[in-house]
Length: 170
Image (cartoon, rainbow, N blue to C red; front, side):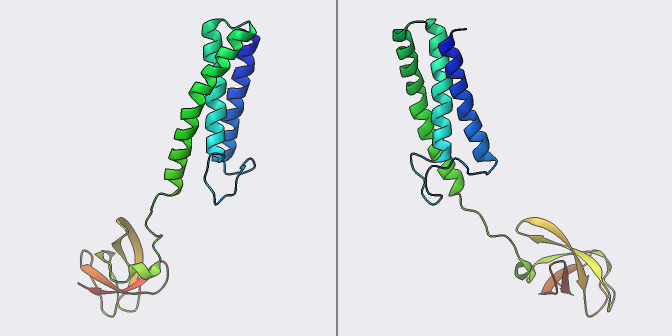
C-alpha cells in the first residue's frame, strides 16, 4: 500500500470520526452557529472529509500513485467525490432536522378519547381502560360514577392524572 493511500485513509477515517461525534450529540466540532445550517455544518464537514479521504485513497490505489502528479490526480478524484457527498449530507441533515412532527401528547389530549374497559371499573374504585392516544393504544387506570363491566365502550370525561381518567359509558 502506498504511503499516500494510507494518508488518505486516515483523512477518511477522521471524517467518519467527526460524523460519529456529531451523531453522539457532542457538538464539539460544530463550526457554525447551531441555528444556522450552511456549508460548514458538522454533517457537511464530515461528509466532505470522509468522501475526500476515501475517494482519494481509491483513486491513488487504482493509479498506483507514487509520484506527485499521481497524488495530485488522487486529490482531484477525492475532491470530485467529496463535493457532491458534502452537498447531499447537508441536504439530508437539514431535512431530518426540519422534519415536521406531531406534538407530544399530554394528559389534556386524553379528554374525549374513546376506548374499552379491560378490567372492571367498580364504583368508588379503579379499573383499567384501553384508549388510543395519537394512534397508540394506552392502558390507563379509570374511575366512574357507576360500575362498568369488561368490554364496555367508554368515553374519557376528565384526566385525573397522567395515568388515570374519569370515564363514562359510550
